[in-house]
Image (cartoon, rainbow, N blue to C red; front, side, top):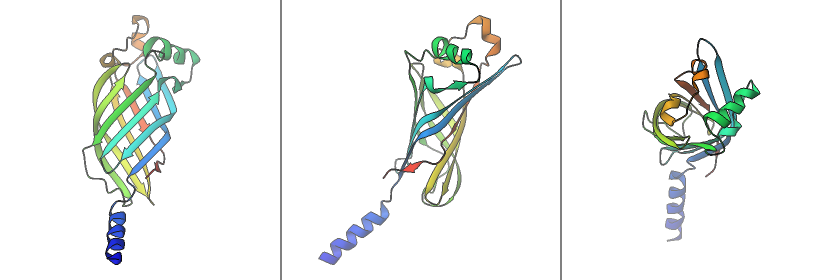
Length: 181
């Protein structure tokens, strides 16, 4: 009986390996390009949680953490556009719906992510390609998608409307995620 108990424990333990990774240093960046001006900002303090067993991804980033090349751009971004005091975070919750990722096998996996982005108090659907890299038990992820500020009720004053693109490219690079289970 004792051998059977040990065997069941070993089998259960070996078939339920750690399947969750996190980082608090993911880089979120965005880029707006117009004939008049290119605007880029980055935030290197993003939170990402990937639960491979559930095929889910959760992300969050503080809006005040975005850094611009010009202090005035950063001020306008926080005070006038995304209103960081009222809406301090952007959140994303989604699922991996594309090609299957073999979380325990080294390789690069191209998949899809479907979910909801909560930005500026407004929820919107996001579907984007993502590349998951598994190497020596470590995990990293990159994704890129576009948003329209108008869809998230972000008002751009007419005086600078030609300086800001109607479509903003968002890029997420996780770096190495840490296994947490």
